[in-house]
Length: 208
Image 1 (cartoon, rainbow, N blue to C red):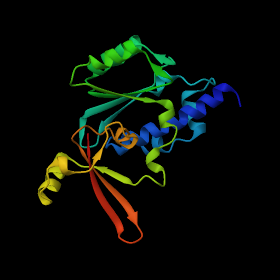
Image 2 (cartoon, one colour):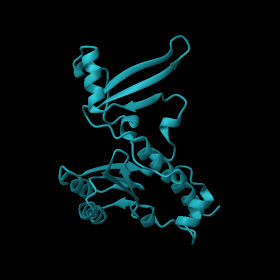
Image 3 (cartoon, one colour):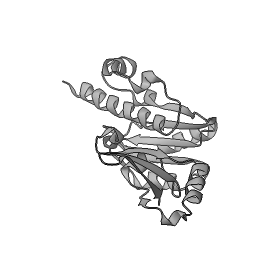
Image 4 (cartoon, helix red, strand yellow):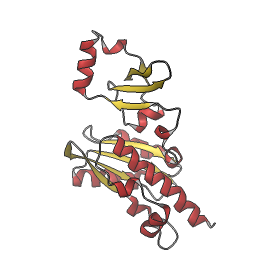
């Protein structure tokens, strides 16, 4: 198997996980993108052997608010610098896309990180290394099902049990599952575990 074919197989897995991830966050994703097969991926994105990362970029709308869009892009450079990031941020501004995910190959330069820190507060940009998305961690047998609560569901939960949010168990903002779901600090996630004795065990965690 040549290096181009190896890269295509790797990026196919990353591309598929990225679509599953944004789908699990509540964005509209076609079933064909969720189930894309390797041969189809190669025909579409690597007809000459090497994958064209520019055309991997995709934009998805939120199911309950089509104006709330998310862009996912795959920079060509192994180490991502200022120039490509600024181009993506400018594209977000022009198309009024408030959120984006950068899936980079190996690293981000220190100056690129500063671009991210200087972005307007109305824009959010997340970073994942390709290696982090080769497999979907939420599909692992040991990872229980997670559901992110809305603000209303969180308020109902706290009122029902007469709790302050600080009394809830915590999940770190940097936790891999928290990052997968794009959890923000202050959000609450519902965790459902199967139990041989209790049938189903439900717990809640506050993102910090």
